[in-house]
Image (cartoon, rainbow, N blue to C red; front, side, top):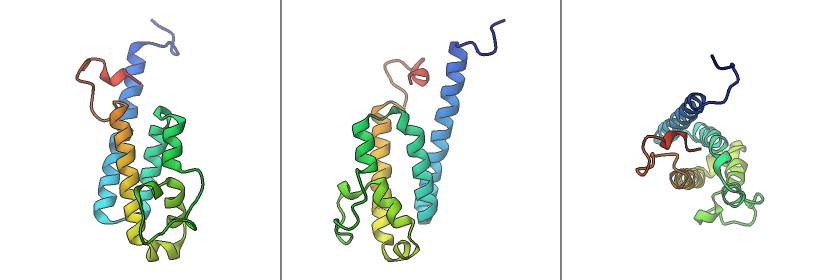
Length: 142
């Protein structure tokens, strides 16, 4: 019998399955919160999803999602662009009760675009759908 801490294909598979299960649950929660218009729930869930996915992202991809600084003072909140949708900007809006009410539409826009960016990266990294090239081992390719 192998030692408890041994590194084998079965433990890799089990951890990969648990990891993908957490991601699936977070994606479902994102969908539920977006349907309900629950800004706080959606922002917390998408931040948790980012934490799970961040291990697979390059520094450049992380910077694109995080933003290099909070730019709320320099962007036009009434005419947002996709590039303005960063976690730092979204958190600055969501962590202010007045902004939650005043800029609800802008927060929804940011959350939508952040989730879409995350989903695109996840698809490119093979985290959403298994690879059709190697379906038997797609789940262990992390």
